Length: 194
Image 1 (cartoon, rainbow, N blue to C red):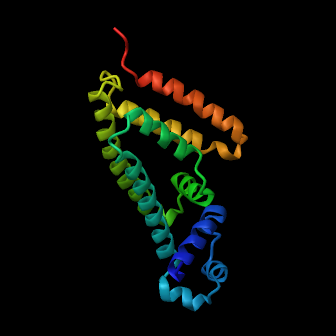
Image 2 (tube, rainbow, N blue to C red; image 1 turned 135 degrees about the horizontal axis):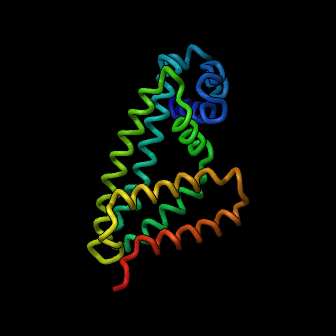
Image 3 (cartoon, helix red, strand yellow; image 1 turned 135 degrees about the vertical axis):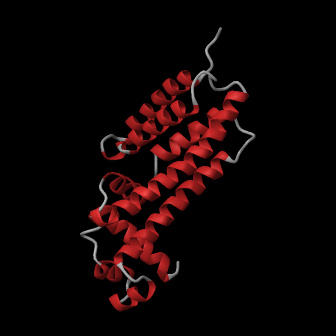
């Protein structure tokens, strides 16, 4: 891992745990094992580091989703189930904390930038999922009477809710809960028997 990657990894952890305002350039530099002036050789400001971390997070997120969804040989419901598990049993705690902290609480001077990035990412995700949902409707897995937006909204409200549970519930309870949630969601999007 090169110095720039170490800076971004360390900064992400501090931004996630301590918040933007409480994270200083000195703390980031010290955690990477470099002097503060060396940090400025890589990034001009804390804001530049934050934007780079945010960009990296969104690229990694959408890339991982695109990779799963690219498997056109698997049933659509199987892909949705796997993504639900991946999203809700997220093993990168600092990445998850970063995402949820800044989706809810943006520093005032970065709010417009963060909101714009979330909106751009939402558009990318909507396009990817529209294609997937449409494929599910065409192959008879998903009820065509439901709009793609209804399914997308419901799915991601479940994902967002499940993603907040690691700190609240034990792992066994969470896995059982995910199974129950998936069963209800799957039943809800399945075509109705005539």
